Length: 348
Image (tube, rainbow, N blue to C red; front, side, top):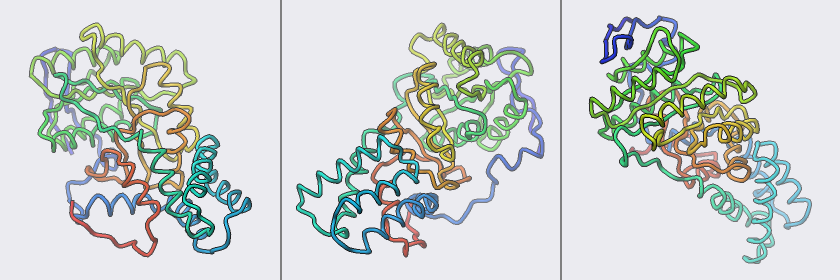
């Protein structure tokens, strides 16, 4: 598939260049899947985590028996193997013991809803939808390690905000990889959104030009990509700090949101990534991707306890609509639902 060249206000900016065919797998097809509700897609996306966590918990609770120390030890093992983490597991079990005492529960079967509510209480503070109406352009800077799904998330966010009636501009700030720029341009073509890019130059220069273009055109939201990097690559972390400083020179209040994109498959390593990028950039929100391909969805609880930051969006599939704002109640309900309900179809 080939796009066409667009030139922005700056002569060194190029957008929507020819897209390599090999990149087609990284963007959604134009064919629309059978329409199912978000609840159904979320539950299906969390299937592997539910099998690891929810099903094992159901097995414990349905087996019956009295509530004793052995039962708590078994629950502890299940939570830890689902990457809930030591701190969150301890907090959940302490909360559960308190609920058992307050509610005078004696049977294991009675603990199911108590644990459901304890997990919900832990995750609710992370539920904080992103508000983008305070600035124009509202600058969202995205960061993360290579392979986390950062560029794909930008494309899905562009689609999401377009559905909200917002105008969007994309900045291809990952100047280290030509493939990343081309992938973002492919998303731009799919969504009908212009992508500001440079054949050469650094990320700060690209995003500087993109901000000026967005402001001149009255664009609502600027989504700024940055190069993927490991937290241990200190010189690259310095460069991403430079990107933020350049943005702040243009607009002292920008970036208005610093989103860290995390691959749920990394499990406990995601907590370390949050800490490292937060120290470097001041992370204001998280995007948790690839929940549909992992049994480690319990890492959300680990983040809630070890390094809490608002989870703005979660991703549970490859389609454009499979990135949605995080709902703690929907997430917990999907984990605890009866496994016989694998075929759920509701309306959006």
